[in-house]
Length: 252
Length: 252
DNA sequence: GATCTTAGTCGTCTGCCTGACGATAAACAC
DNA sequence: GTGTTTATCGTCAGGCAGACGACTAAGATC
Image 1 (cartoon, chains in turn green, yellow, cyan, blue):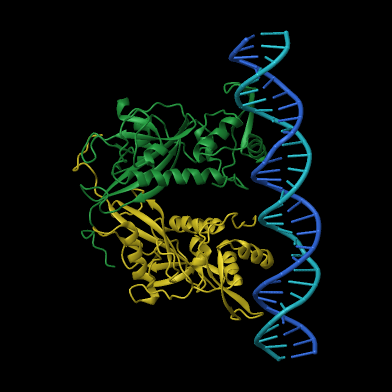
Image 2 (cartoon, each protein chain N blue to C red):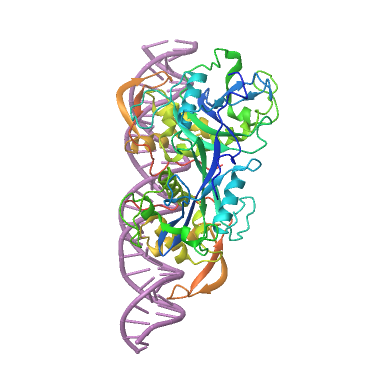
């Protein structure tokens, strides 16, 4: 395997983002409308080129900030500063995935609380939170009656992989707290699991599980009634990142 | 985010391989000696450039075949043809990871049975199976007294990620059978787990677990005494890919 | 203010799974 | 035959999850 620097074919490298949040009891992903050909006018995942001097994670964090205003949560910093969780997902490099040239895309997965409103370059009409179930449905119509064409490029596949990663990862890690604000109740955390898995969980067993797992939740002392009903204790994410034994996803 | 095809910086894209096997009760990885600068003479993971017209998985399968003679096991083909398991691991793109130019490497993880002897371009002295514990140890000496320098580039990190992936994935999947020949005994499978996790497992509980998990193992009817002792039933990997509940890794 | 509704929280019980470990079986070495 | 090695079956106790009853404490409604 002699090394010839002039022999390697040139590639473009991009990062694409699967940004997930939970709104109105549904798992939603950030989609942006393409303003350029190909797939002009179609919805796509946000993304962009990796610059010559930046790392892949840096590029993903930069794109995330540009699209949402969220700054990525550095895994080295245990303090929850309400930043988004960001991790590498997978890399997609089919020679035909972009008709213009050879593009390899390093997809990343970001998880964020509900709060932020989407803004793609300041233009709200070109970015939206869409239920993943709607984006992954190849046919049919969106909730606003708009025809729901499949996502551009291979982004349906990327989104599908990202959703599957999130669904499986909240089983054995405390990642579900990344969908919650800094302080949250057990019920709010349960609704995250229910939205991501699209199942109903028993509130009593869920409460026993999460409060009984050391390091998962730490009580802040406060309470809230923002969900109605009896006041609920407020918690913050604890230091534990791995849940052992895991949270069990109910059978289909 | 206007699109300017001339604006993207050029990248080289490579695939690197973490090829794992179990030999002599130890988890081993394939290492090749570099013949070129930089890191000339140092051990590295096998890999090479992605060609202009091939997919990432194709490139990884081609490199695997070139280095080991193993052909990748297509996930779409359920029949175990004794090919190696191959999956994408992660992508490494630090701007400084290769001093010559900007290289993004899509690392893949391959798992193979013990049988094949390494051959890098036909030259056996430039390829070897090394215990991962030795390759990941930054200091010290190899078993042949040779100074064990760290792997070239960021390959120590890549190998570490690959080993961790394999260690966790055999917990909840039937992937451990990829380390076994087509037909194997429960004891041989247990020794795979013990080597990968570097622990001792109770033979009785392990036997109960694997034979009691539907779809994990299917008996072939034959027996063997190649391990000595009482003849053991031979099994083949069943159709199940996910183990639920998982195999539990003992605490440290 | 009594009642209803909505959440949250604490308990109980049963069944399944795992870890620890005793016991037996069937080959080989001497 | 005796000992050694590996495989396989059984037993028992503890832990955890699913099902579900009961109680608590707020706002909403009449």
